[in-house]
Length: 308
Image 1: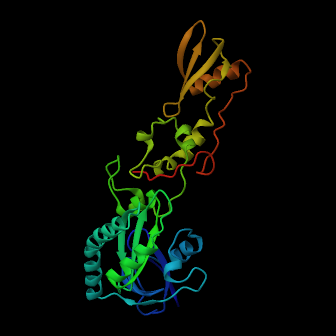
Image 2 (image 1 turned 90 degrees about the vertical axis):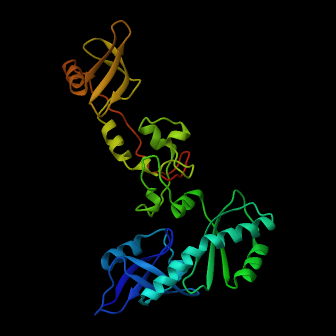
Image 3 (image 1 turned 180 degrees about the horizontal axis):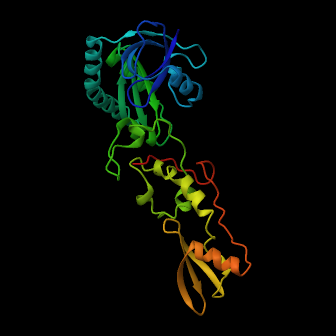
């Protein structure tokens, strides 16, 4: 039975292939040689079988277009990678920083306003991919010809965003851990400012931005909890008729289940949510609840970011 496998390469690049050897099934972390558009590349298996098929069917950002054609059938894994194959692969990775420095020099010579973020050799050296960021569109045709004559291989320049750059280069975030996008978060989805507002976070960019300068990806992690929890509380700014009289909701504490109220004559008080419900029920008042829009990163002032 043919086995579908997910293979990851350098950075967040991945592709899906088929393995036909039933007697020797592939396992996660196995290094393999795969057939790509212009030769062969080396990657590691990150999912097999049903899991790989599920991810392949629902993936929105994989590199199947690079390795198997965007609309064509999946290609097959050529073979398992040997120790010598892995050694060659490691040597190429070690040489890529030197290559990047040479590309930077050539880009400056051509007076191109671009930042060379990373370089990646294909395992058989038939292609060199250069990743860069730029504020505007860059005409790099002359640079490509220059680099092709220098490295004697096919050159591909690929412009990426700052989030993708952070994912490729990695780093340590404010939480003290490696960037999520460089470890387990492989699908970068949009993040908007409304997520921070719903969680009553500071809107200071330095407090809610990641290493890439965009909004933290982890603003989405607990957002569903905040949306659900706030539905149980009255909305801030609303005036309620309680046992004391007309009181205005100043703030709510969803973790301690408390509501901050203020009366024009009697001043402020903090009461448990359950007590507030009891007071309103005794007066025959309907308990008002907040309606927080469940934002999923679409619309509004969309700012994509990497949570660190």
